[in-house]
Length: 199
Image: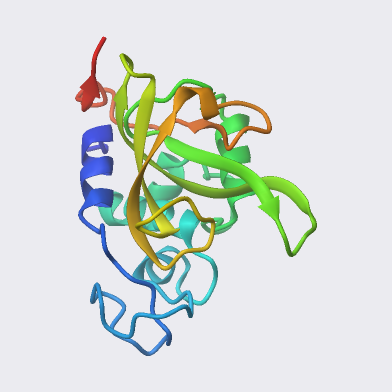
């Protein structure tokens, strides 16, 4: 059986408050143990088998692995089937959705949102952060996300925890903060069970 958008969002939200660890030897499943800035998380561990890299894409990948039960099934869900391993790299993650014809400018619950911004180490702008759309309010033209490698007090592309954020539809497109949305291959029977607000 496939995964629904509702299940994807609920699993992601269940990790709100999870903190990255200082050491790979830490209890990666514990939400608060060894909290620090070492980029060691359970999400990267279950996605590729090691830790220590920036982990916003690995948060998305890890949620997919937890729900589908395997890396191969998670790659299919996230349109990464052609890759040797789960990517962990946001430009590649977004490209997989684009190549699969599953890239949009208007969010739906369960979409994988990709953010555009400065990458100081590279001295240029590119897709540099990601998360999962948790709710959409068409009336107020806003949407909420749950993001890994974020923080609880504002947007960042390299934070230390899983946190929720809110954005405007006006922030979507091109070089704007929100570059676009990748739509996972949810189960056709259940992907209409959205947490939508408004019509």
